[in-house]
Image (cartoon, one colour):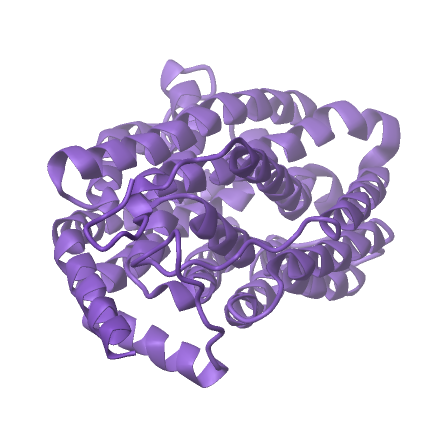
Length: 444
């Protein structure tokens, strides 16, 4: 089908089987990415006592030591992905982080674990900006939320995979052997990635026809700043995502919390959490991705408003989760809801930010969003969370982990009005972007 000018539009593009296959491969890479990222948190009950780490040191390793490099390099890698071959860039990042994951298995203390964690962050920062840019060039806007949501399944399923690694492989390989194994798998996948061709870049206003020119880094930076300044919905989505992820950062202490204050065996709770993570996470990604797309088409509001409604519904369960005993039904509902919320988050947020910027900075905006989420949201969440736990322990608090996690849960609820207002403004801001792009194309 064509529009009045004989151009195949983005909304009319067909989804091809090879595009779906490529999406599933990228989703598997994202799964490996998050198994790798979460392995340290999942092995907390082994690594913390063996290496003699404090909660503050553990918070730094899972927080700012990793996240500072991951987030800051993510913006650079996003800008780089808007200029170079993205599949080759992903292969480079995969080799880097996998090699250093294997090296982490030989750590003897805080310093020898911190150094590879820094550069693992550099390698992992490549994947999501490059992958989401590739998917935006393969999938039309009407299905972009679902495509991004499916890719985002790698997040909760990867977290679950790291817990399964603990439950099923730790008794066989030990925690160090698990790090060695994961590093080897990543290197094999990196070699496979080298044989995948780059996807042609498409213009947002005529996705089937017009190839996007590679912008300079100066143009990328100027376009990003202009987009944030002129699109209130884009700015609100960025800020809301940061706020919502405070609890995601603090949740790095969940395994310690469930063993120390809820009385679970460390192997058993890792296994159960993994299974609930898959159920809740996959369901959340489908609901957030597909539901957000349908909500946008039916209501004319942006996907963030749909996410806001989900967060309102989950809020009572998430609060009860931090207060009840481990044998309560609300505990198990809350544990599932955490993963469901993680899944719901990915599609609406990352599809929206790409819809609200020119197509030549799609990878850059993802890198910027990752920077803000990881450095401020998750980074502060896990680092301040660790310091708060240590302070409460020193003060003699009865349940320092529970108190800390409840505080961060309540703070994260501030994101709800941000997402709702962003959804209300979405169509207005997207229309302004498309009008500006149309005028620019006509001028050229």
